[in-house]
Amino acid sequence: MLKGSRAGILRKVQPVSIHGQISWDVSFSDPDDRDGPVQMARVGPECVDLHLEPGDRIKLDYLLGSVTRVTLDASRQGNG
Image (cartoon, rainbow, N blue to C red; front, top):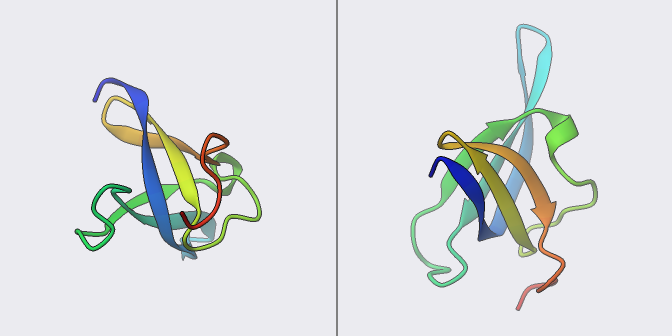
């Protein structure tokens, strides 16, 4: 995907330090296939909404095939 967004279900957010630089590993799955494979994106903490919890429906923004932002999907919040 060159530029766009897609929905996902948040599985886990884990901070990781690489040479002192903090990034977040965001694990997510397809909302239409909750038992499908879990994917991961590594982004800076400034690119992730605060207060996200596992099970939340999220929106992932992409640019040139890489996730650039992770936000709570306001159109469908919660575990449903």
